[in-house]
Image (cartoon, rainbow, N blue to C red; front, top):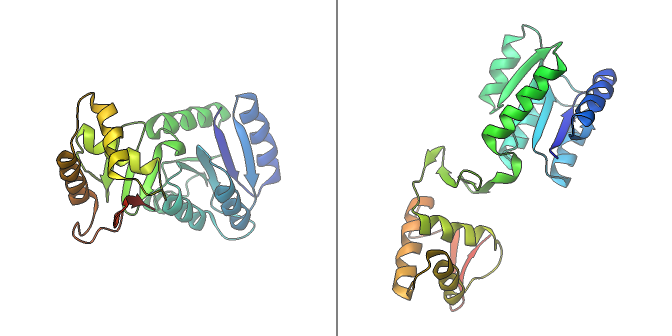
Length: 222
């Protein structure tokens, strides 16, 4: 079941669209304004956001920017027919698609499923500063550019992501890489892979901000 956040201040649209989406197997939460929308986004994980431009408080553009900056959740704008300005502005802010009102419910369902299929939904994206990791596609990017991580570099990054805030000793990291590679990975190899990974994801590998060294204990990603 996919979770949908519907941000719309027209009560009629909210009622009808919620009923239709629910009948199609989606779980729907709704908000009529910017404040409540961002509260829900912080409280729960959504696979997609359906977002109107005009809201009871704030506006859809601000909501889109906040969601993209903090969660990378796919966004579909619901815009007035022929409103080219809203469409262009939405795409500039990172929106994934738009559909003009009035729209056919079946077309909206198709758009939603297509966007989720292409993006993998919200659960697949993890952000580390300006590095984004798509765990569905097995791909890491920095500022939109593919980092071309090797299999072991990617595995090492996933180990850190799955243990955010935890100090990992070198022996713990070695064990994780050894299990993945199916062969012995020695301490020198680990040093090389950490250095390579930092060279790809850090702005300044000599002063890392993502993979931090905890002296005498190991490494930590916050």
